[in-house]
Length: 445
Image (cartoon, rainbow, N blue to C red; front, side):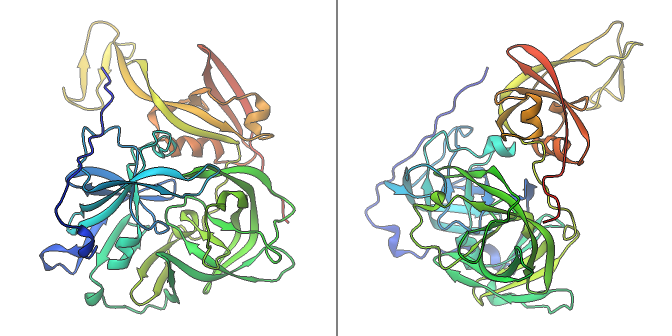
């Protein structure tokens, strides 16, 4: 039986204010650094974080100031201290949202600890990034960690090292570049150049945003014009709602001496940013699909960023060629025969050895995630083939999808241009098979 779990917010009335304490993360036991293993999911860094003793999963988001908690329904309880009501703004087409502000919380990442951390709590159940990523995500955290440490992110090994800034030593390398970093209002920026058209590079100031799974976002102006070839697309989800814009590619993105050709880019609709009063002079942002191509060291104290390209650097940029957006939507039962025609059951978990001999066929009933079509791009191959929002995906190219992670399924749907894709779906209790051909989205511009 599935139970809805309740979020318990404990209001601790203190006779003194926590405002007099400095919000700062430190390394316990005098360590030089602490190493954290992370998951890379859809270009986002997901790290384990403890909040007042509750074990949660956060996206490391260099574009966020104070940590934000949401989607706490899978927690029996979480203690939050000194709670007051506030209103916060976020990217998206919606209005500012109501939230809670909690002060004096203990946040830990192993040996990294802050005992007086402020946290914002979004109680709107509709704000939930977990279905789109396929794993539970409880919040986002960023600036405070980057402020207090030298943060070494290794996308190759999927590890982060948080160094004590006073004990960190630069190790110059001919294979790495040290570039200037500006930090304005808790956000980090670098200078770069883009070539959109006319063989003329345009200097741009870009936000470093590890909390974005996209590649490059650019803001249209007199100098940055949208290329002729683009398509309207859903770009993502912010705290205030969905974000839409125009998806395209640019000829070149140059960061220091590193050049990325035919870079994936998007021009978001500027209505998305109505709640943002000051852009800090930026022209756009760099997200995870670019950042994962480097191993990088953030040094906010000295305003420096160290870049070293890794094995992802020359990989092709990925597009949603099929036009299908997917998300988790609860669970479903799947029945599968686990005995072969000789009556032998092969047990993957090996709890009874390699095989179990039985006298008749056997069926295993499993509870698996239900993957549904959450959106279809108009005019896309999937849309033209007849797929619809709400369809439950059962199989792709004959492969039952419950065996795969959400991002693996997206790869199946988009991995090969000019390849036919067959998708089996359930619609109103009927199984339907659709077929379409993947085609390149852009010719040479």
